[in-house]
Amino acid sequence: MSSPDFESLGIASPVLKAVQQLGYEQPSPIQAQSIPILLEGENLLGVAQTGTGKTAAFALPLLSRIDSTQKKPQILVLTPTRELAIQVAEAFQTYARNMKGFHVLPIYGGTDMRGQLRGLERGAQVIVGTPGRILDHIRRRSLKLNELNALVLDEADEMLRMGFIADVETILAETPDTCQRALFSATMPPTIRRVVKKYLGDAKEVSITAKTKTVERITQRYLMVKGHQKMDALTRILEVEEFDGMLIFVRTKSATAEVAEKLAARGFSAAALNGDLSQTLRERTVNRLKKGQVDIVVATDVAARGLDVERISHVVNYDIPYDNEAYVHRIGRTGRAGREGQAILFVAPKEHRLLRSIEQSTRQKLTIMQLPTGEQVSGQRVQQFQDRILQDIETGKLDQFRPLLEKFAEENDISMTDIAAAMTWQLQLERPLFPKIVPLDTSNQGRSEHRDRSDRNRSDRQDRPDRKNRPDRKDRPERNERSDRPRQERSRKEHPRDDDIEMVTYRMEVGKDHGVMPKDIVGAIANEAGIESQHIGRIRLENDYSTVDLPDGMPKDIFNHLKNKVRVCQQPMRLSLPSSSLQKNHPASDKPKDKKSEGAPKSPRKDTAKKEPE
Image (cartoon, rainbow, N blue to C red; front, side, top):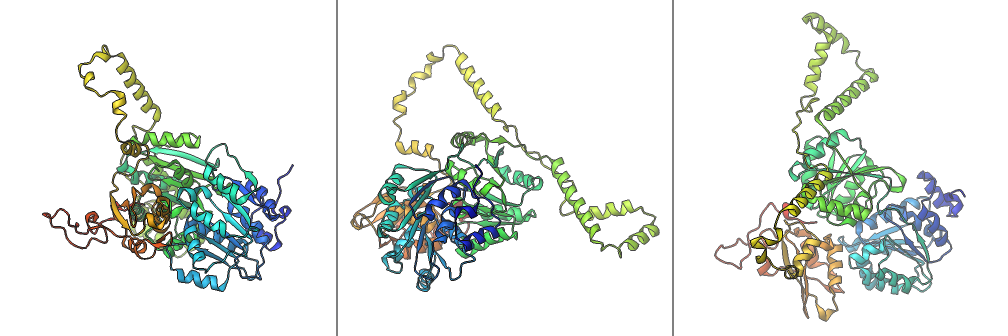
């Protein structure tokens, strides 16, 4: 049985025309199975990994059933992040390019609400947004869902992880009983199953199972390299590897700017993408990558979540992620919709455990990558130099220069080869064709050596005589005593966090009396400040206030946003920094510290970049 095409699926002619203009020939498995169900108006539960074409799976059929003459909201799509909201809204706009009078409005936190209010007043058939901001508009009565025809929950498991499920259920309760509902998720934890049973009823299920958690078309390699050698290793890879667009992932916001600046100084077209940039700048950076105006984007996980740029051929994990799911999402930015992709992971010698954890989670062995040699770098530069010469010769604009050089050679009795060699030497001064490559220590490249060494050490210990009778053994604590170490210490080892990140205790004017729960605080901070949940520390709930531990070095604009604009359970958060928690690099700390005064705040420091967590 042959695979269906888009025309046979029955989508509306204006939508089909847009699909054909985009050059899409055959639907992906999730699209082929989901589109007919949604066209029939039935509820749908879709289980599929990222990068399988989920957006088109619900956008194409829902657009086919839309009434573009009506400006009221007919479709609502909920996404966990603003980046994904923008991506989905752009997809709807692209697929509806041939539909007159169509409007889609993205709604998310971190931006001025007045523009969103004006957009809602003008009218839009499709609303795409994050749960928190959508709920704000519902409670302000600026967004009414009483005539909604369809609602989509995209990446529901991510919403659960970020603490948005309570908001999602509140929104679902506001939709009409006749509203068509679709839920897409990569995994199906019990909480998501409960939501499906309660709000989707007899939904038809489409499950796209994969042999591995990662896309098979992505070639995954790793390179063993020490931390201080990463930039030199990255430069060599960029010199030799043929790539179109590249996404480089780092752990912190400050590292995005640092790596991008160093790459630019080495002659590469690079830009930074992080949560500190305004939404306008972030969108501009993504558009530059799409248009080929920049070739490399250095980003954090939060900033690049939901990023879908067709020309990304390579993903480089400059910093290895602590979360295996983050690794899957990172490399999912390439090899999308059936395209080939390359993923490279930098692993420090002490990060063997994280590498093994990634392999176990993805059920794929990563191939070891050999660092490009000086000869390879030179060969690539020489090849590029030769290609440029051939291109210049083909242009035919050299006629006026040939007599000049022939005359110069005759007058000075010099061969044309010597002249060409002298000119080549001058041209390559800034970028030498034969650079001096400093050898990097790759003695720990192979894991087999690491394992062999471990095995030898283990056998050496076993062969030692009278091992159990060593005098100092009785002084050791028993195993059950050692296992009684604080739970927090074990948890920190099981879920590692960057040791350089210092935590600061903040106060919020919301508490138990307002019905606030820890998940509400996590969701608000993660969505509005772009701080990942694993970097949100201990939360203490009191009757009329709460405290939360957050990474030190919070940018001033984000602090002011949380302080003045963010609400939790419809109560103003009013984030503040108690005087006892003031840190030297926090924006609220504006008084120099008296060394004799233990409780006084420390003086601010200009260079806070190194401590800004993502």
